[in-house]
Length: 236
Length: 204
Image (cartoon, rainbow over all chains, first blue to last red; front, side, top):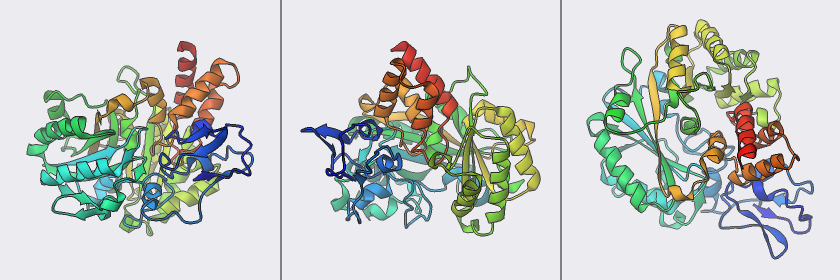
């Protein structure tokens, strides 16, 4: 994204709308900082500029295009066919049964909430969880970015790209999940230059309860009181 | 939608606060579930959600239905638990074979399931935020910014709007409408945002 200097009247209305704070006044001119901008498209969709001075280049070059793919929900990723940064994960689990009893799904989302992430941080997490022997969700848009599946290393040319967020999704056997959480939390708190949310997916038992939710609390975790629940509507 | 489980500010002390509904056709079934998506979206619209997918882009009901069919998904937010119970009951009775996710307090979801003789199938649970948490905005701002499923609500805009409300240049309702504008999923909750904005304007 960029500001057309010939059209901009310096009203400054656009400055606060950028989630990354990339629109700023510099030397009496409104600019979009090229490095801070993640190409999410919010500034244009807001239609806040009366002069239509907020512009997008005709074609965002590679590797910068990755910023848009992981930041603009209206960009559908080639590898998933769905908009957004993740997969269907548990949303359709009553159809797919990707998450079964005895397996815990993990989503680690880098850059959220509201900080953004360089892909160098994604690289760190991908390497870490690869070394821990996880089973990746192959349909996740992060997977094509991994250059070396043995180490989890991302393509080197993309590491300096910044995105609103990127999600790593994988499965861990339930008996290993609590230790896994401890190790990953320690790693993220010590190694990351951004924030990350971590969430777990657990298949309910025959009473509709999550045994793993109880285990989390017994383990000393403080999971949020709110979350997502697939209610089995597809199989009624 | 993934991020709705990381919405901040919901509390077991205040049940029946809000519920986000998502209905999604499994990707391989998207084509044969088009009619089902139409039916589901009409049902959700009938109960007048506080926000719904594509509405922030200015879409009317016809366009919302068309977009949900094309995407194979519909998302909406309600502040009335009773409406959600009724939506679930109606969709259940039609046996459309499309998945539904409720995002809100687990206690509320349990009540809605029980009222419809249903049970939770799969849970998605947030363990919190890790890493450089020193870079996060304050908790109240995050109660608003985490309401967008794709993190498109700017914390800078929240602060700007709070200042305008304090100066009497904008109302909380106007500020909420502006803040949900970039959130195409329609899961930003204007009523809750208005309340939070007014609280912030009073307390600062």
